[in-house]
Length: 236
Image (cartoon, rainbow, N blue to C red):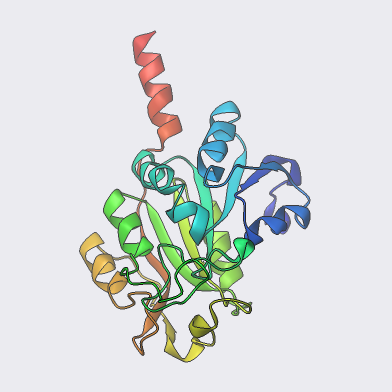
């Protein structure tokens, strides 16, 4: 992005509380750690304060889909011009491996020694249903294609959501090494109905089902910043 004329000072970031948040210490851009589950509203606040910034949020499946669920859904609905990367290893690994809303049925933890009995929900399908204007999934192990998808998400005008599937090398070992199940979607425009159908291919249980990667859906919609500006101008 820097090579394309973007400037370091034009970026800001927020992170949630979790293993993913360590990225804050490796990226030399302004920002702050958010409270657990509160990285999204913090990013929206930064964007409102300075609409010229490119605001990036890093969060985990635990804080996004548990404590931060309401923020996630309404960010999809509001369409702020920010980018959310959710690192999904299907466990609360920072707090020693409790189940998250995407953990597979049967996942045994200290909190659930008999195994998780709730069906994991599908965040890709949820984001599409809630109105997100850019929805994608990538694989942390793929260092060739993942950066390209992330760059496209950052350039998107509107709320861009990218789920990054990751291995959990300590706690949830069942979900590791699924590269053979993964395939990349053709890079083309899709209807919402088509994207929703593709989102159903993987249900987050450790089955042999295919796991589609790439951009499921994108559309150009008015962002919340533009809508707010229009309303204020109208009121004045």
